[in-house]
Image (cartoon, rainbow, N blue to C red; front, side, top):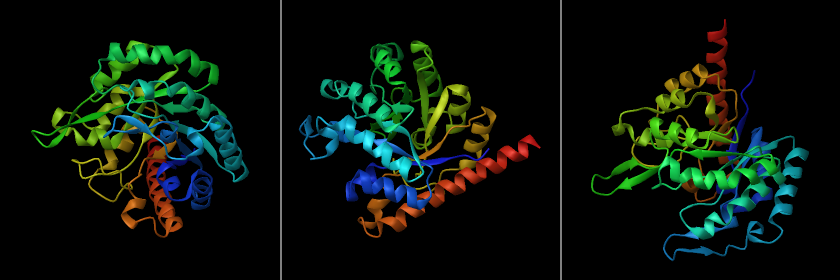
Amino acid sequence: MKTTISTEIGSIANYVGEEAAVRLVAEAGFDSFDLTLKNIALYDYGSRTVKKTGSPLESTDAVEYCRRLGELARELGITCNQSHAPYPVSEPVIRDSLRLALECTAAAGGEICVIHPNNRKSAEENAEMYLELLPYAKACGVKIATENMWEWDGKNHRADFAACGTPEDFVAHIKAVNDPYLVACVDVGHASMVGHLGFTPADMIVALGDSVQTLHLHDNDLHDDLHRIPYSLQMDYAPILAALDQIGYSGVFTLEVYKHLDLFGGQDIALHVREMADSAKALAQAYDTLRRSNND
């Protein structure tokens, strides 16, 4: 079975808008797109308020707009596989946007909506938020994926623990909700930044097992959250792919490389979206080769 590939479109839409981003993703050879929904409520950490961006996603027609994006994608031969909700969920104004994010995901045809946990809350405390959202998720037919996070330790100048930030705490979050509509999105880049906590991205994947139903794939220098294309920096993807094979992962390979286009100042966007697709294809092909060899 051939692994399908996807990418978040927020970084592309920053330059050309969502509709053109969907077209570029299809033309580059992706199978799906990850609908970035942060502009439903784009949080400004400086003023601690939501910024107005002029995006159709912050209008009263956001759901219909996402439906049109899904229709456009299908016309181009691709689909929306998932979305990413606004954050940080610690802010009430963001929490209030999460139900709309689920509706928008369903309208676009997505099956999963990634909703961050509150970085500083326990599994039991975050479960309250997810349990509150689950009836809306089920009504929409959209699973919620929680994600492993990190906090910056300024004293030691490194990423450190946050919610879902170790295999044990991630598993605890899944068990605290104990519902098939709450699944795991493993961000392999985030996991690689906190190696000093004594685990690897592969360890996290194996610990979560079949709860892993989506991924955020990117590369970094094992220290900073750089969100570059796979195989461009220092992460070792071989054990990650082996771990995915071990748990029988058959989901989409979704890139979250939202800093790639910024390296080029938004120039030659189509070319650099193709570079994103090429990196995802290389990763997916390596995984498919591994799976075939292990099944022979």
